[in-house]
Length: 463
Image 1 (spheres, one colour):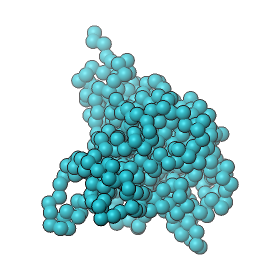
Image 2 (image 1 turned 135 degrees about the vertical axis):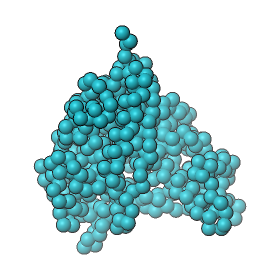
Image 3 (image 1 turned 90 degrees about the horizontal axis):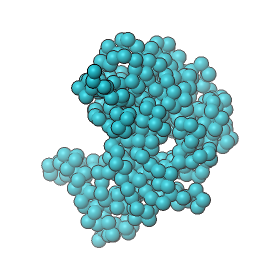
Image 4 (image 1 turned 180 degrees about the vertical axis):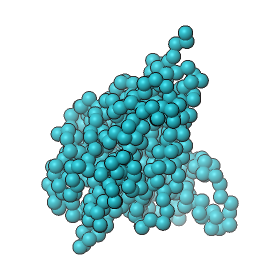
């Protein structure tokens, strides 16, 4: 009888793509990647609202899982466990049967910046709580966090009708595949601004300040523990056989860290739609300009998050594309534009150092008013596309490097950089600038689809 290779499946529900990997546990190897772009966010919403269709995301995820099942059969693999990761902070409201009662409200949502009586919702929240309360969640609480979004609903007419629970997007999909189990994991719950990773329970102070009732909260299941089995209906729908277990996952930052192969002496730079700098810590500690995020087995990830990251490069590309069209030129395909922008940046790295481009197109979490994108240091000699592109890339790196270099020296023990994410791996100019600004050698993670790979390894018990 033919031996079947034991495999797990890791699924990453990101901000722009959904990706799934078939992972051979014994060989520590990804056998197949399936991916598809997310649909455009819902249009014609009030300014600052960012929502996606959760049913469409679930259907897309189901199609990818089906394709993975077919490949597993062809490769003589036995899938035993599936683990989900994905974008954090946002979420949706569901009824008792886990049917959505709202759209999926993403981390980009700005409802928390709504001004009432001269104060934003976030500012009002911070007047109610001592700093120690929100620091237990791993960092400050920001607009776009699900707890803040829930409070906005409470302050503006109440939760969507028939809502009984709030959930993250990847937990909602995973739970619905194994019998409508309503759960979350510590990393996701903390990213909503509601869970104390220091005390390992829901934060009563945060819940009280945000007026969120306990019954709205799902069960917390440790990252890497079993959630439940795929139901017979889910097995048939997806095309899997035997016993397939859903494993409790974690946020995409942590999953990317695990999937990248980062070592303790390395600082991981991850550039995708967003970007982060991160390194591991053995104890809970709050440091200025950082978040601390939960890892399984009582470990923590010191994280320097951004709100723009790789999206900044896309924003500049869109500006160039619109300029071409406005002056009667023909637009290029995005991939062609990106490649040309990288070439131009490589040609002007030195010249551009006199230009300072702060790419806070979506604000900055650690500035009092969020911050704005700015350009300074321009003159008639450096006001050109090449210098602007190179300066933008330097600004993307500085958004991580400046908080990092403000940390105590005893914390900054990392000797090398590890780069992950397509936003970095496909941009040689960004790689060179990152190495120069940090003054460290930069290695690139040898693994693709780091977040999905991290989820697959967690499912396999390899972390």
